[in-house]
Image (cartoon, rainbow, N blue to C red):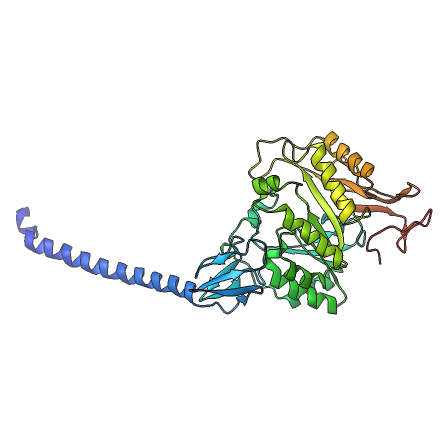
Length: 384
């Protein structure tokens, strides 16, 4: 057989290859153009489910400035703020987290932790993705350090949140797990509706928020547990990329607005565990918030970017409690310790057991109408 007669001439072969290449390039270009178009549309069009943010202003040249938290981010078009949850679209600031909860759970109120707020009741707890801090020890970093758009969740309206809270028999709605400040508009709308329905709202926050939005929100909050993470600007800067002064100001504002406050201090070995740090923190709380302010000293476990540190020794937590009590704080607790050390509420007058807890479970409650059952002393908190 003469194989040569079946071979394609060189010129014809080159022509076929060239035509094939042109056709392939054409389709690739069409696909690339389509992708570009879709990408451009995503960045220039406003999705219908997005909500315009509060507390911002036009900064000129397409930029906007956010005034929700102390960072006051100056945000160019198509860019996000530090929290990742607020984006400049066509010269307006929009919330990327509104109606997008990444966590919804019914928890004991003690888990917040709030020990002086409706003991033994359920709290309908929600969070969205993002945070306006960068804590190296974050326990929920998997969701707090995400871009909200990277998480696909179903839209849940404020009305639905309140409805579900009622259906689960929850006494409160809690804004928690991540930093509630970054879903401020969602939180505010929920809190307003909840108040109309007779449901209290609480939050667990780092307190890194500006005065005006905090005062507006405080009108709809019953209680807040604020993380006072340390007591020096150096600590806040190094470990959280935040500001102590801003958090202390938020605590004063909440006190002025009549919101019940509890404090959580996560004690991290070699970072914020010195006697001086703990003493100064407790003294500030007593002088500015009052000796009746509950303080929760929480045990650190290696987490996120601090995997090289050891868990907080129990003796450090016990010493912190002793320092707080010597300064004159009435209600001091130890948390995140499996042995359930330091979880009970004791009457500061007669020293009898008021609330017996194991984990997040209330086993005994001897507070009647806000008073000690045994001596009649007033016990500060939100009881009824």
